[in-house]
Length: 208
Image 1 (tube, helix red, strand yellow):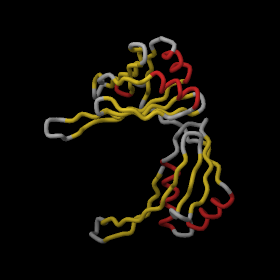
Image 2 (cartoon, rainbow, N blue to C red):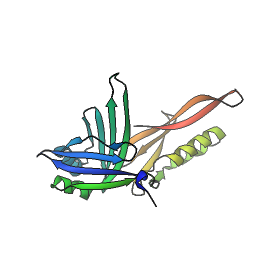
Image 3 (cartoon, rainbow, N blue to C red):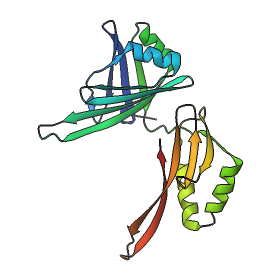
Image 4 (cartoon, helix red, strand yellow):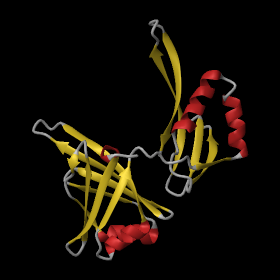
């Protein structure tokens, strides 16, 4: 059973004629400050799927819609007297119906369980991407890197579908989905082993 430490509490309240006030709470950070969102931006998001990027007192938020859900990524930042910045990130999904209710004047509460990992999105590999994967997997180091990438990424939920293409420009792949498009770029680095020797490291990372 999940406990209070495993969740984020989200509250959205209509504020004045043109804004929605968003606050969050978790046991590690306490109650957040209030982030004011423009109602017109949220309405455009629901009507036209136009993403929202906004700031409020140094913090910022990214909001995007995919199918019947709205994804929020909220970065709370605090600047101290030395101009050092600290902060944390809260990410959560709201049903579109709940956000629409807020725009209609109702309050909304949401509980996001941070330990409940989303299932993997549906990945569709083109014939050319299958061929490319077979080619790079002939090398054990490359095989481990590409397998680790697809194991650890694209946990967007089973309702999301991504199409994967090869991309020679980044020595990796290109993907398309409802929310965004981007590249899966190959990188090389070196690590120092326990024996003090230097070893080659290969990994893949998302670039959008």
